[in-house]
Amino acid sequence: MTELTKTLELKLVDPNAHKRRKLRETRDAYQHALQDAFDAGCTTQTEANDVVVNYDLSGYAKNALKKYVPQLTTTTYNAGDLHDDHPVRFTNEGLRLDHHPENAIEWYVKIPHHEDYHLWMPAQPNPDQRNWLEALHAGDAEMGESRLFQRDGTWYLHVTATRDVEDRSEVSTDERTLIGVDIGEASLVTVCHRDDHGSPTHPELWADEGKTVRRLRKTYFTATRRLQQRGSDRLAESFGDDLWNQIDDVFHRVTREVVEYAESVENPVLVLEDLTYIRESMDYGEYMNRRLHGWGFAKLHAQIRYKAVERGIPVETVNPRNTSKECYACDEVGYRPKQATFTCTNDDCWVGEYQADVNGAINIADRYLSGESRSREHPNDDDSAEDGAHLTAPQDSQADAETQQLTRGTYAS
Ligand SMILES: [Zn+2]
Image 1: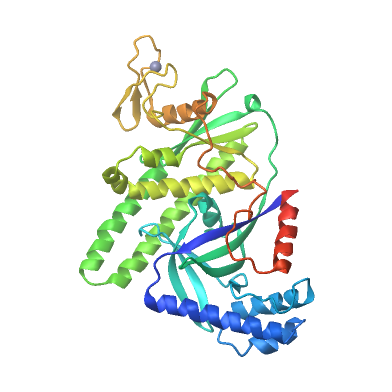
Image 2 (image 1 turned 90 degrees about the vertical axis):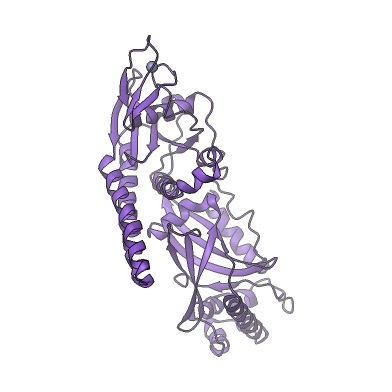
C-alpha cells in the first residue's frame, strides 16, 4: 500500500460581481488576520487563536491560520518578509464538491466565506484530474487542506486529495492479460480478453445497466421539462439531482465490477479508448448531441481509472478508430446491421456474425499491442511522483516550501 497525494486545480468559472466581492473580502480578511498574528509573533495555536478569532472568517480559515502561523514564526521564515500573495487556506472539510453532469459546467465547489455563510461556485477542473474528482466525490479519496488564490484576474482553488493505492507488480507486457473495455449505449460496458491460445474468452456485458441508464436519462428529460413548464424549477432541480445520483450509483457498481473482473485474471491491464481521439473525431453538432453520452463516457473512464489504480491494476489507452467496425479475427471493416451485431464481410473469414460490443472490446485490447497505443491522455498518471512540481500557486513561504518538499519526498519513495 502506498499513500498517494495530489493537488487538484479547479478554476472558478466567471464569478459574478457579488461573488467576486465576497472572494476578495475573504482574501483580505485572511491576509489581515495572518499579518496580525504574524506581527504579534504567535508561536502556538492558542496565541494565534486569540488574534484570528476577531476576524470575520469561517472556522475553516481560522483553524488553518492557527496551524499555519506558528509554523511560520517558529521555522526559518524571516520576520518582516511576509508578502501579500498568501493563498487563503481552509482546513479539510471546509470545502464541498458537487457534480452536476447535466450542466455545461459540471463541477461545483462550496467555499466557506465567514461563519454560516458560504458560496457555491461552478468550477472547471484540470481534465487529467477527473479521476481524482470522482474519487473525492465518491468518498474514496480524502480531502485535505485547500487554498484559494487569484492569478491574472482568475480565481483558483488548489485542493489536496489523498488515497491509498496498491503497488503494482512489474511484469513485462507479454506476460500481461490485456482486457479490452468498450463503453457504449446498449451495453453500458463490455469487457473481454483473449485466453492463452488467443481465443476471446469470458466476455462480460452490462446490458441491463445500459437499459437502466437510458431509462433514467429519458425520465430526466421528460420530467424536468414538464416541471419547468409548470414553473417548478426547484422541484425539477431536486428531481434531476436524484436521477443523476441513481445513474452515478449504477456507474459506481459497474466500474467496481469491471475492476473485479480484472482482478480475476493474471497480471491484468485494462485497455480503454483514448477520449482525446473521440473528441477530435466528432464534429461539433455530433459532439453536442452526444454530450450526455459523452459525460457518461468520461465519468465511467474516470471511475475505472481511479478504482483500478487503487488495486494496482495498470490502465492504458488506445486510439479507438474503427475498433467498433473491424473484425477482431481478420481486421476487415465490416458493418453492424443491428446495434448488437457485427457482421464480417470477408468471405475467407470464419466470423459471420458476432456480438458487436465484444468484438469492439477485443479490438481495443488488441490495439494496445499493435503499436497504436499511447497514453497521451494522461502523461502524468496517478503513480507519477512528481506531482506538485508544476503547481502555480503563489509560494507561501520558505517554511511552506520545505513542508511540501518533505511530503513530496514521502510519496516519491
Ligand atoms: Zn472477419
